[in-house]
Length: 322
Image (cartoon, rainbow, N blue to C red; front, side, top):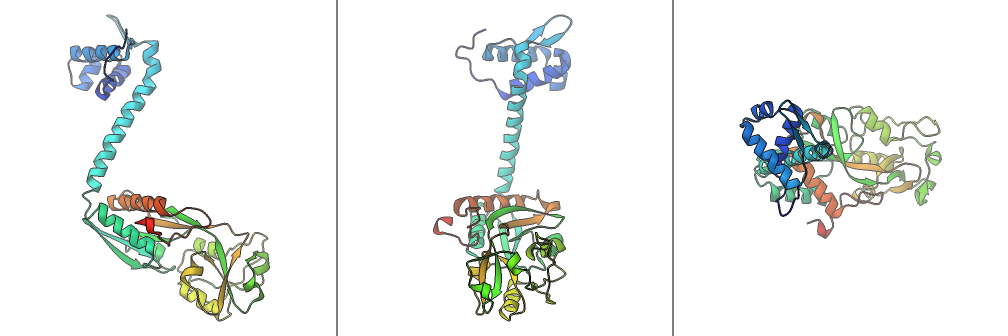
């Protein structure tokens, strides 16, 4: 057989071949496909002519795939699955463009430029979807998601069980020190140099894994972390306590720009790995159309204007952010 100027095989023909390869019987395959046996036979012959190779060995007793048919079968299956995936994606895209309702997006600072950009892009792509912003403190961001008071939250990781997240950007972790401490005027410090300083304690309502992460507890060398008796639930409360000389706190690099305060300084901690700015949502709701649309917009926004690296400032929307 020669292919000549034959057109490309259709997905329909490939799908028929898949069913025939499973049944190895034209009658049974035709019955499954709700077509007549002669029609199935003609389609297979047309496919063979298109590809320029025999795919099926026919006899009065049985049907078998040729060696070429067996070799091509994985490619046939992959093509059919890709076509099915394309059809599903197209259907979802059509439904997504018709989204309506309300999406509640939380953040500990809702006035960030990147949030404004995200909201604007959602309005552009999904005009029927209303976006409501709400401020959530450290002590409430997980609870707001798990209790359904927010659909998604822009915050910092890690996330407790029941939540999922995608990284928006990575940032260095800094230590917030009172400006009366000698280390406050260093460019960089290590955890070991901070080991004798008490750490501002966070509200017990905040998930334990989050509190431990932001206190760098446990320390790599096994040093016990000393805590203050605070119950801080916001970055404002944390830096205020540090400014009064009551302890130190570990924060994301963003804090040095968003929360400059008299009496404190921010210093890089060289042996703390970067932290992740994230978009978080309830795992139980991950496939809801509004959340899928939001993740797509956030991913697009970050790709356009945020470098997910240790020097990133996820909150700072540059002009090209839109």
